[in-house]
Length: 498
Image (tube, rainbow, N blue to C red):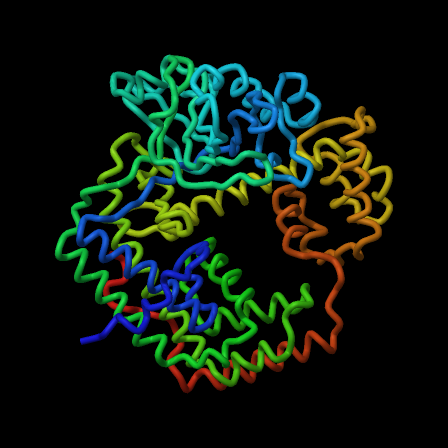
């Protein structure tokens, strides 16, 4: 019988957890805190005393309410928390504070026009805009909105569908702030909207607490088994051997989520080698630690995976209780974004499994698509200017692609100050901050704009010196020969896809 008590004594000191399983790689204290959160959730679900709220995948984030000093209603983005807050008391303020974001301006204008009809007379609140009227799509008798990664749907005759049909804005509110001055505001989770009024133009969505969860004996046994596996694995880790990797390992783990692979020691070492070519934060001692103590890193990844599996088991018990909206990612049914435990922990399924896609994996994919669109738009706007100003530094196929992508003919210089400033930064990045890439023969013959862009994205300038490159390759060969004698080919806990 594994005793969990020694690993939950410090849970009450927890301040913030991005993802509980990732905190486990931050040393012994991090493991105790991460384990305490998940074991505490396990106990509360078992006793039907869990206090969780649902996370909604809206965008943009909105801060609004009555300013405690001016006593006037306002709306704002997260820039409300800037050193010099950007608060919008009027529609003219929105135009002044957000001159180059027409989509954002439209949502702020709608928020300012409608939210005063329902907001309390005191207090400041924060939430996520789920939609405005133009965002609603009709699919037969269903209404759908996709504010970010997740698509939310409701039948037109359901309670939420009826509200969507009449509303001009939909908002999921999750946080309340109170204080006598703006600088002394204190926040707390908001799980009900009793203080708000009602109006057909405003569809308010609360982060209602999830209660009376059907946490079956099978769910309980799996969770306990995975938590026990995490303890066994972490007992084999000497925290001093992984010291200094607290920033690198989360980056690598997120990378494996993007590529739908599992973290391995060999994969992590390759990640460090590749990062060392373009970043200065990978030092020789980091590589030495992995080469000398591969088993410790393997057990860290096992610990992280066991905790993730325990978390996912509890998410599978929670998801069926979210019936307000139908949710999907990329057309595949999914659960909600996740849950908030108290005010400091988020419980999110990051990877896809048999029950559906994972939110983090879907979000990373969406982010990459948005980034690619931004690159294409940048080339479209500045194509001919790039050709004139830096084209002489580029081979013809690359120059022609950059000048002609997604457009035909020549583009004049940008006609406003914002675009001119962006163009200036773009030129500097190409011409002064780094050398241009050395183009391979194969890419010089390539006429596909998409392939050229992909090549450019994966080949930054600053070519690696030959000596450094040879040293890295030698280190890789040395490590490969050593790991053949030990088992690090991947972690298989048995009941992997729960």
